[in-house]
Image (tube, rainbow, N blue to C red; front, top):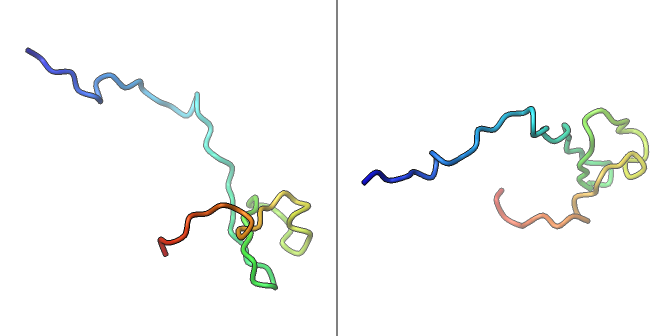
Length: 65
């Protein structure tokens, strides 16, 4: 009796149906806060107004590094 494998039933994926996330960059401001920003922002300007997220306000799990 032939067994079905999990991998044999997977659908083939491509980037035609799934677009990767936009490029982000980690930045630390003059006060020491970490920000997650789009790659091409003005780091001298208002980071929050440009759509950046301050890392200490986000729910990141602790540990790892």
